[in-house]
Length: 150
Image (cartoon, rainbow, N blue to C red):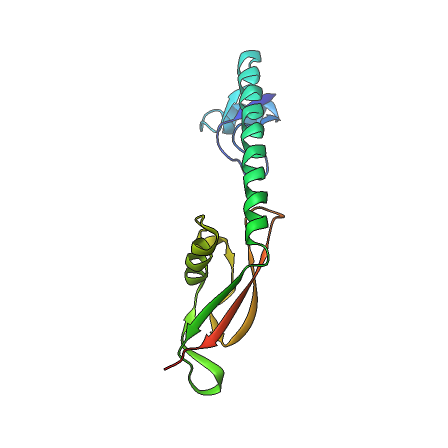
């Protein structure tokens, strides 16, 4: 039986997709819970047109992300911080700090969740950091931490 998923169903697909499922699974699980609708010709046509619009919007978004990635690639951000014993910082440089500084330097907002940083930077020196814009689009930036002059 063909159904149009109205919500993401693990193992079956994402919302808006048309899937072939067993009749019992559809009638006993998906349809009563509102997770899917029976795929009528009118509904299928509507879903396909919506998917085409989404693909066009995604291609436009993708172009903007590629352009943003080119601006970000190779950027060098410099931070001045107080240094303690063993070249360690008092405090740390976090993803939020990097996102804020990167946003200032490129003139476009970058979310701190897009900064690929396992843990905050606590050492002086140069650090390579990736910025996750899309699945395969990860431009690299260099974060340089220097000692603050008193």
